[in-house]
Image 1 (cartoon, one colour):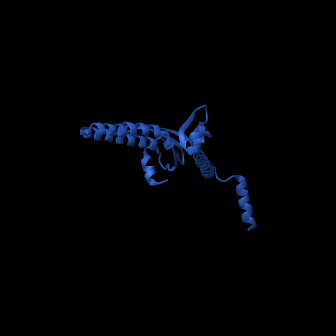
Image 2 (cartoon, helix red, strand yellow):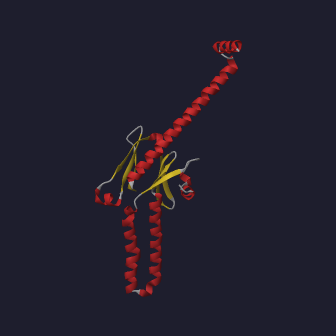
Length: 207
């Protein structure tokens, strides 16, 4: 994942956390909003301009407001997403310039992943809902109208497996280090066990 995208979502990441994949909603889900903005801020002003051309200033302001609303919809699409990182899944919801929410699901808390594609439109345009089931209860987290949910599911499973493998390796290394420290500490306090001393003497005699 590019550094630029990491920077855009920096506030949602923990230290040493990296974005592996961003799951967006399908742009098709935002078409109704685009159509409403297009009709209200483009088609209607053009019709009024044709009837009352002397009010050009008002139509310009009207259109500029439409551009701002259009940019808001685009940002809403981009920031309503899931961030699949090396640690888990971060769900981001952007509802305005000054209102953003996020939720985090660690990989070890994910019990299952499922995706649902219903109807002709979702099948043709390749979008649907993807859901994470969390351990310890019926709680689920869903990204609605996700673009290519099967691909998202595949990337999620791959990231989770990699996380589990790395965590298992890290836990083994930590356990080895802990046991080594305990043995060293025991030897410093109590000395070598009698069995080890006898074996050491036997080896010296044989030499």
